[in-house]
Length: 138
Image (cartoon, rainbow, N blue to C red; front, side, top):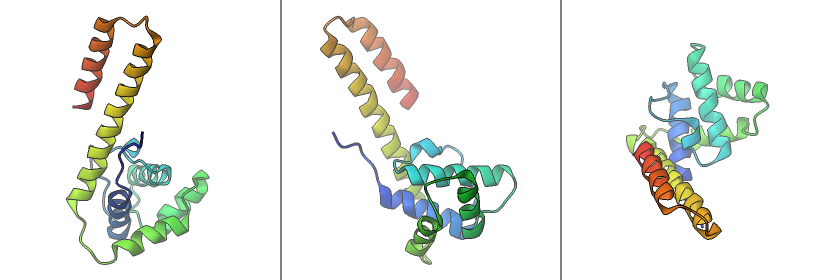
């Protein structure tokens, strides 16, 4: 099964944040990003913000290098170049969150499928588990 993602939305969203020196919005977590390099960049943006440092290409790439991240100056430059002069689009952040929620739903589904395949699973326990997980996703 292919997990849902929107790498273009992730790339454009992060590129605009870096280009504009914008604050990372509340409600979005690095784990919401599908691409591991994007997760590293999101973590770096949050770390820089916590230190009171405005992100730009230099501060982000330096922090990534210092952290030993896989994402590098080429990745960051590509992001800021791709967005060009376009305005930040709130739909990009929304797509990051939506696809992260869909991946969490798929993960719950896979865990339930594995438990059902075991043959000894308690249906009531699985339903309670699913209900709790789905509530946390909602």
